[in-house]
Amino acid sequence: MKNMFLEAIVLTNSVSMTIEFGKFLGSKLVAGYSVFLNGELGAGKTTFAKGLCTGLGVDKNFHVRSPTFSLINEYRGKLPVRHVDLFRIENEEELQNIGFFDQNFKGVLVIEWANKFNLEHTNDTISIFLDDVDLNSREIKLTARSNLIKTLVELSPLDLKVVNN
Ligand SMILES: Nc1ncnc2c1ncn2[C@@H]1O[C@H](COP(=O)(O)OP(=O)(O)O)[C@@H](O)[C@H]1O
Ligand SMILES: [Mg+2]
Image 1: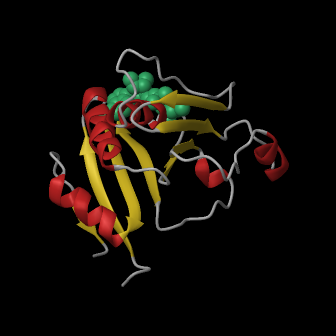
Image 2: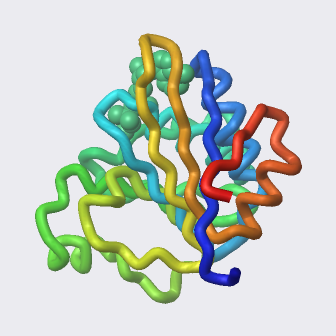
């Protein structure tokens, strides 16, 4: 059971609903978690990350934006948050160079385009895939080790469906 992955799916129909769900997830995270965000350009990765950061206690007025060019943004909430975008990273060496594998970092990592590299999926990884169903709707699929998904499903203000249970 311990190594089982569970999936949950939520459908949002507005930007604010995606942010609200990100905020909910962010409020449940502790130091050491990594959130992988995947999906096409415009799917809502950065939007979701904004919600996550708010849930992690980053000031709402702080402008969380895509680190497409800066590569790593660091915010301070109740925990330090590193927001990374791998879109422009070409290889593992570049990943090393931007300090991605910093073992001393004690906080939450939020990684857009995580699937570009074969990153380790640990017990503390939540993998999220966003899909633009239509103009204002997004399907958000979460995959993680069972316990965290269970907590999310039990507590979420949104209607989360567990699949592959
Ligand atoms: N339900 C929704 N959730 C998130 N974004 C949405 C939603 N509906 C429309 N959008 C729009 O989709 C775009 C998502 O952009 P962004 O978050 O930057 O995507 P990505 O980081 O995946 O490229 C924004 O223009 C946003 O306004
Ligand atoms: Mg983005």
